[in-house]
Image (cartoon, rainbow over all chains, first blue to last red; front, side, top):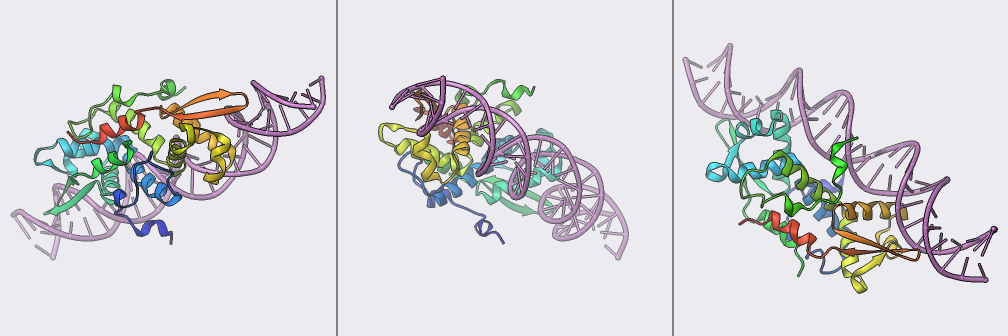
Length: 116
Length: 116
DNA sequence: CACAAACATTGACAACCGTCGATGTTTGTC
DNA sequence: GACAAACATCGACGGTTGTCAATGTTTGTG
């Protein structure tokens, strides 16, 4: 029972100040690294980009599988990671699952990297 | 001989537009993911933070080993990754190696995550 | 109720990553 | 030239990660 999994939906801004401001604690670094890890994958970056560029700002899995060139389970896997990291929301309608960018979530991470 | 290692010092800004602007290509995502991967580790985040907060904005390995609680080879390993990703510079004086933040490197990454 | 479609979950496997101890390399000192 | 100090590199090991095929689950349709 790893204690790290008790907070899947982490809000980075609630934890950290900009990285260059002063030395981070081990815990702050842990939370921030988890969030960055969710972004540090080419498939997931393209997923965010595809969802953001899609009409109505939302997309279902079937819209994303083919342009990514990955299998459906793999796409679902990456989407789950992005949802748990707080970058996407999932809303299910009928048999489709629609994913949406969480407004400001990327900007929040950007804010932690920006100096001053 | 993996072709991916031919460009160790990557400049993300030369490759990509902000993530939400329009769909990224596979190559753009690959480069950006490599850069983010360098940041997505608690030890490396703390290293950047420690270097930035240090007097004279530079620090040697001996300054960093103890506050991190990691062995010297491990710290050297992480520093190398940060240098190759373009976040730190290394200048050797006598037997010491001094590391410095590359000005604007973090802001460049932040710019790619910021919308509009 | 049977069936199909859209998606999630599981299990397995190869590749990668973080860590350390041991060793190599360079530089200053006696 | 012998020695020590600071750091890099190497080799090995366990843990994590990305991927897929197979299977499970839910929802709409005939």
